[in-house]
Length: 435
Picture 1: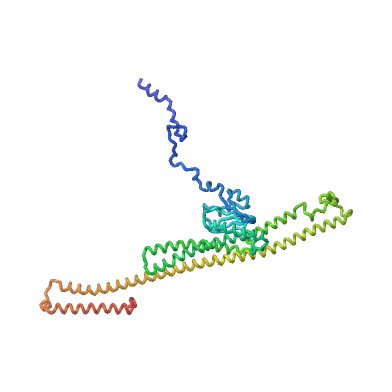
Picture 2: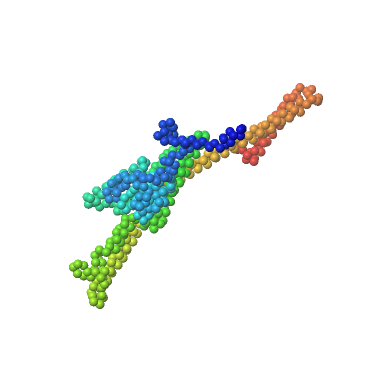
């Protein structure tokens, strides 16, 4: 029957789909190739790639010895007791403004090329091939090594600042030197270019000045940010006190020594050789001398703690003043750099004003020339009107006189010159042009 083949085709099962193509190296017939639009897992997310361990340069506070270490973000956070948002300031994949953050156990410094973490025992500098980073590390090692040699020889060091302040001072010095060098380079390039522009206004010179001004604005913002950061630290005594890591470390050691159960002041209980134990109950009736000893020991502990707190407050106030003087010195340096850039910007603005004045003067001259040309065209148009009148097709007795043509030219010319002179006098009277 005719319908039987059709029914057979309908009931026939579908063939199995062909196996998918694979890029396995075990199949020799199919070459190994990457599918179209398939992303590389290594470059899928740059943040995940940057989350691995980074190279840091560690500088020891005592000896000045440096070593290269590999540590990830979690290790640095645990090592320096820092939150994750502070470490983002040091991420080289992002551009953050300059900042100096004082934390409980560290100072986070992000000043231009210098990105480091300063603690009471070490400095961790983000490893970079930048020349200023290398100079910072080498100079810090040299100063610490010189101080260590001076202490070994018994000589008194001239620098009484704590380690963290010396490292911060060197970072400020490197940042200020870097910004001042860029400002000086910009000045050397700017002044001859602006002088050339005033003498010759061209499209090429205007484009060069535009690029120069863009660089100047970007550099001014960076210098202004460093200046504001230093000024903010100087205005806040709490932030400056928070940055005194050596004092906080000494207080922690003293507190741990006072809280030590083996402290000699609190060992007033019975020992193996005799006496009263802290854990044993003491009867004030049976042993009044021992209770007096206990009260005396507690009073000594309280007085020693009060004396240490008074001394620590005095030391912190003194070192806050030292840090304030240090910040003030570099505030003057960065403010001088900002003044240079401000003066350069004012010079550029003055040059632009001068160029605009020159262009306005040229434009005024063109307008005056156009006014004179329009007046002369009007005078010449009078001759055209006379020529049009005498060109009419009619007869008058004036055409029969030979001298009439000369008189018409003379009278028309005299009238045109008179009208032109009248217009010039009117323009001068109205001060429309300097004649």
